[in-house]
Image (cartoon, rainbow, N blue to C red; front, side):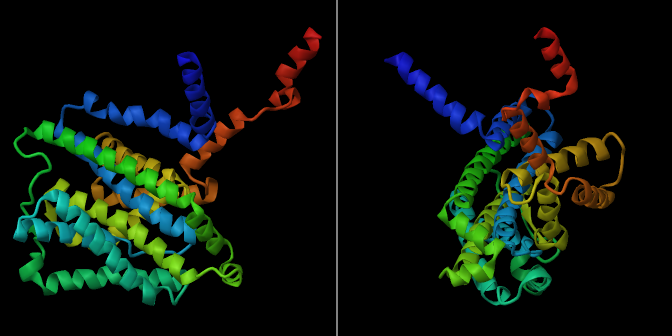
Length: 353
């Protein structure tokens, strides 16, 4: 009986994980991420990897919106900043616990997405990108106008740690594993949404919006739903970032942060959910450990370097690194005729016959 049970588990695992390249890639990479704190005892690398994990949540939320509905948003930092400022404001001035302030920041970002989505969805394509890009600029202006509440240039600083009472290294290790857990939960939820009936409707809107309307689909409703779900996880990333860096300032609403998920998603693979996660780790590992430490390139030049890389990827590998790897895994898993395995193997086979 036990033998049959384990055989069934092995069969389901092979069918639903090993035979799906994206899940196999996640299975191979996740143990490596778990082992990061075991190889690092310094604070700086741990903070970098935690930041990469946080931005992976942010980029995956952007990919759900753009990769599944085609709504090009260049103002996603608005939801990130709202999550950060809401969490910081409630924690600093009302002394609410973190487990309450971060969910409230997520809800506030979702509400903002619905309010912003109604006027924004009246336009499409590059016009939507320009309209969405204006909202973080408006948010930055409000931050400086209400400086008595937001702190102006300094922001709201002195936020509490996730794990008070522990040493610096222990705190950063705990934050890293907490970020990893949040990334895993967020990725599973976003992946389930993208592959559900709602996700299929979103893809149909991406392929042909007019045909979707002709089929009786409420296009505005589903676009707003995509905006809201995307903003929910962007708010989660923003709230976590505020407590990770101990401050929420106007940088969380900056245009650089709006362009960051674009770079991460194109680097990893648009419309894949797992692609932005891979792109985030590549961006921060290469940017900090290669460009910063090995080549001593100033951080101001990192964005230009990765923009050049993105242009190269758009021309050479438009599907991204993660999609390229999963395509190769699919090629390896496919059964092929012996003639397709190369002339050398074919000659050896004929010689044996």
